[in-house]
Each structure stands twice: as C-alpha cells, then as structure tokens.
Amino acid sequence: MLVGVMLAADFSGSNEQRERAFQAALAEAGELVAATGAQWVHTETAKRDRAHAPLMVGTGKADELAEAVRLHEIDLVVFNHELTPTQERNLERVLQCRVLDRVGLILAIFALRAQSQEGKLQVELAQLTHLSSRLIRGYGHLQSQKGGIGLKGPGETQLETDRRLIQVKINALKKQLKNVEKQRETRRKARLAGRLPTFALVGYTNTGKSSLFNRLTKAGVLAKDQLFATLDTTARRLYLSEDCSVVLTDTVGFVRDLPHGLVAAFSATLEETALADVLLHIVDASNPDYERQIDDVNHVLAGIGAGGLQQLTVYNKIDLPAAAARRPGMLRDAAGRPVAVNISVTESWGLDALREALTELAASCRGGEAV
Image (tube, rainbow, N blue to C red; front, side, top):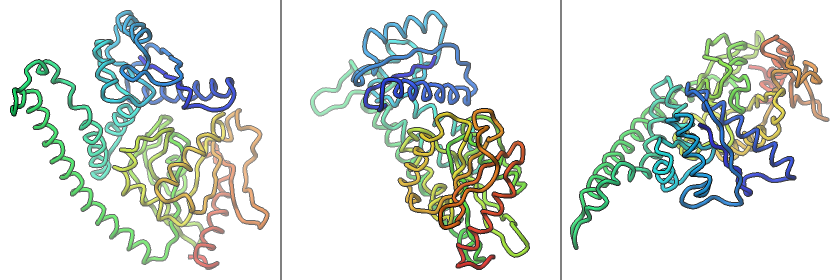
C-alpha cells in the first residue's frame, strides 16, 4: 500500500497548483514502488497542516490505514515522505506490518540496481547509516527488563553491541571507498592528461540519459523505462569529428528529495559531475512537470558544487504528443552560443544538431581549439 501525505509546508502556490504537485509526487512514488518489483494494490492519501509527531498521519488516519491493511491483506506500507524512527516504529505497531518511508524505498531500489563494486559499497554505506538510527526496533520485548542503578538492561546492551558493529562496518566501507576513490582519481588524471573535455549527462531519473549515452557512444549501458535503471557512472570517449573528441560520462539520475545519505554516499560518483567541463542536462520534454524536475536537478547540482558549470539543456522525447510543439534542432542565445537542443533518442531526431552543439562546446573548452 502506498500512502501519500500532503503537508502544507511541502507545497506552495494556489490550491490547484498544490494539488497538481501533490498528485505528481504521488505518481512518482508509485513508479518508485513499481521499480522495486513490489505489487502495488492500494493507495491512501492524507492532508495535514503539519506532521503528527508520533504517527505522521494522526491516530484516526492510522486506524483507517490499519483497516485497509487488514482488508487488502497488505504486508508492506510505503509512505511517500521521510519518517522519523519513532514514527516508523509506532506505525508498524499500529498497522501490524512492515513500514517503509521514501528514504528506505529509494535505498531499496539502489540496493537492487547497483552493479559495480563502488556502487554496491556506496549503497551499503547509505543503508547502514540509515539503519543506525532505527536499531531500537526489535528490542521492544526487552524494555521491561531495565538494569538497576549502575547496571544496563539486556536490551540496552544488545542495542549498543549492534550499534558498535554497524559503526565498525561503516568505517570499513568508508576505507574501501577511499581506495576506490584513489583508483578513480588515477583514471581521471589520465583523462585530463589527454586534454579531452569532459561532458557529464545529468538529469532527473528516467529522462533518457542512458539511452542517449548508448546512442552516442555504443556503450551498451542498461536503459529501461523505469526510475533508477542505472546507478553506476560510465565514461566513454565520444568521437565528434576527425579532430574533435570528448569524454562523455553517464551518471545516476536525480529525483525529488534525494536522500541526504545517498548524496553523501555517492559523493565520489557525483564528484565526476562537479569536475566536468560541461553538463548535458537531459530533460523529459513530454513530462508536464518537467520545469519542477529541472529545478530539482539544479538544486542537487548546487549541493555538490556543480551549480556554476556550463549547461546545455537537451529536451528529449519530443516524439511524444505532449512535446509535439517542439521541433528538432539547436537553440542559441543572443551571442550565438548553443544553449539547448530538442531531440528524440527513440526516433533519432535532432542528434546531428546535438553533435554540432557538442563540437562547438568542446572547442570553447580548449580556447577555441578542437581536440
């Protein structure tokens, strides 16, 4: 079961705008649930001025959710909101089933999709960091056995033991990631020594980044019509002409309210984006909420130090009816510099214009000299 909670502070604008934004967020949450392979059987919504501290949705709504869980025989409830450890624990007690918040849901998807050693290490680090604040779950049966003055109850002792073990594992993962980062830095220096401009594909998840990357470089990266189909960063040399080549990197897609723990865990991967010469911001032009998605991506880019990098906006999926008004081709600013390109990877529309824009930008990266 998916539960969407609309808090007044989370959405701005008129009532109609707020409702539209909430429904878009709920639809995206449904796609996230589908991306895990779970069977989505029921949806509940709740609107509040502010979150209910113990249960997020309030006692009355929690009882309604419990009844829905029994009626539909549901064994997992997903909240499209970040829950505190206390709220998650209290909801599981009321609903009598497992509860997962938005952060836990995205972590579950990342755990399923990570393929490389680095990606798996990053996901495990984020999962353990998220779990460390929720360890009290499972020790409720020991709470009545408190220790006396100067003593500790068995529940507290087990909790501290598990926390210490998790911290040891977190430290070990960070050490492993440091070694992987050194290897990445060596590869990065080799690329820079070759004086090849680096272009990074960025954008909201499921906008067609990996499909475009495959079309341009023949890399064979997994590309599916689902959220977070690809997590691992891939770099390939792209030949634009006889005297011009660049390094093109495909990165993890962004999403609304990307968990801070994931941003921290994927800092090494995201660093590839911050060190690029130009960002190719891929946008799903057929999505009615694409302007908000652009803002979300730019917010994350600013957070990783890539907000000031030059961008070329690539409006993809113009073959779909919702984007039919866009025509394939390049858009320039008043100074004649490429600022956007309208394309369709599926129909191969506008790809020549995109390569022309990339060639111009590559030349400008090296002071007007093609590489």
